[in-house]
Length: 328
Image 1: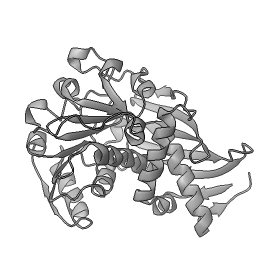
Image 2 (image 1 turned 120 degrees about the vertical axis):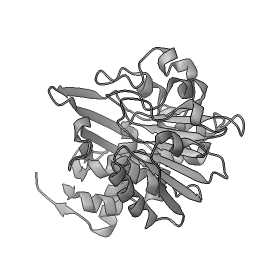
Image 3 (image 1 turned 90 degrees about the vertical axis):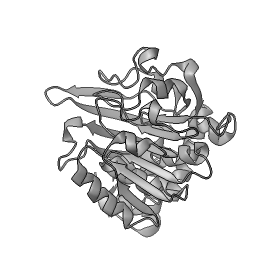
Image 4 (image 1 turned 135 degrees about the vertical axis):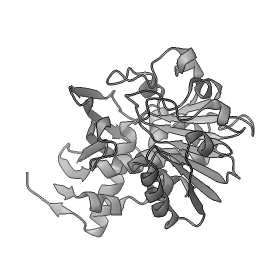
């Protein structure tokens, strides 16, 4: 079995290829070809933690894999990521274990790839201002991925810790050919932005409908166990796109209030979902109804994206001779 470290896994995750395989995976999901059962979770008392199991099979990549991921919200701001994971890849022809891959980097990259795909499909072609809310792992990965699908003139970064925001701005500024600034409030970051990436663990909304200009596209990623980062009016007014209706409508793996709350408080109900991401890719549903339409991509995480990313990593590792082989 091949074992790949985090640095090796990161080096093999080409962002454009990853966005492409995630696109194909989302079509597999929407057309009913993928086998993606609902995630299950073990709760860790005292630290508000979860251990989740996310298996899946994708015919588009012939990928068969299972991700084990921990979600520890209290890690925010510490040396440990809030999400830590491993992915075990199997041979789809024999069922034999083929590779053990770092899942933390896969989770960060594939989540951002999904948002970048949604941005490419939903954001206005002339979008010029990007707001990134949050300063953690997902904020970094979104800054790298979303800037590959639009040419931004300005990137605004806002977080609850100003020093973390400045550090991220310096890091992003060294990688992109545009102005990167920090702002001191989420409302200021959102006002006038054309694309917003909400990547926080905030217990209160960080995106308020009153601050959004016509035509803005919003990405909101992950289960937020503490609360909802998008306010109810944004959810109600938006053209809403999700990875999978089944995934977003399933009960959360814990007591999350991010999604399953009454409609006037922000419910994502089946009737409110405009499309799955795969339906937009396949052209089954229209991406935008008007230039002024508010669009929202709500991502809760789906194993199909992990499987697609892990299959991509394994192919690249085999081609380049990366990783260590071990006997089980």
